[in-house]
Structures are given as structure tokens and as C-alpha cells.
Amino acid sequence: MKNTITTRSMFLLVASLTSPLAAAHSGHDHQHWSASLIHLLWILPAVIAIGALIHLYRRKRTQSDKG
Image (tube, rainbow, N blue to C red; front, side, top):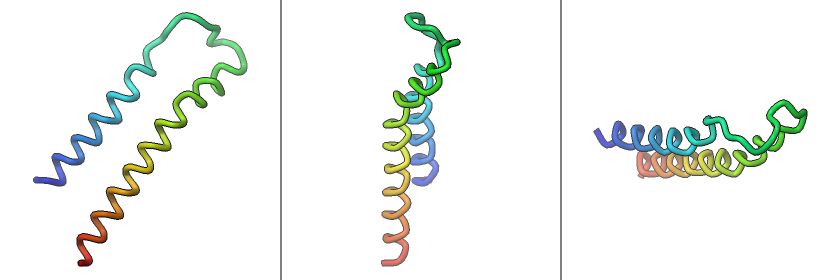
């Protein structure tokens, strides 16, 4: 049961971080060649942080299973 709660929590965290980014916003040209790069640079820290959290969670779970 604990694993299900943690999985749901991770899903909700990822969904809450990505949902606002998926909404269209005005203010700059999305057709410009650099628009994708600029958006990638804005979301990259969140992707790295989520990956680090998943890695730490799995490492902690593996260590607790061994010992």
C-alpha cells in the first residue's frame, strides 16, 4: 500500500509541474526557430530535479531491502 501512495504522490508531483507548462501563453513567438530551445532550457531544471528525486528514492528503497 505504501508503494501505491508513493507512486501516486510522484505522479501528482510530475503532473502539477508539467500542467502549467503545457498551457499556451502569449508574450513571444512560438514559431521562431529558438522557441523550442528556450522552452527546453526553462523545463530542464525541473526534469533534472525529478530525475534526482526518483534516483534517490530508488537507491533508498534498494538499501532498505538489503539491510
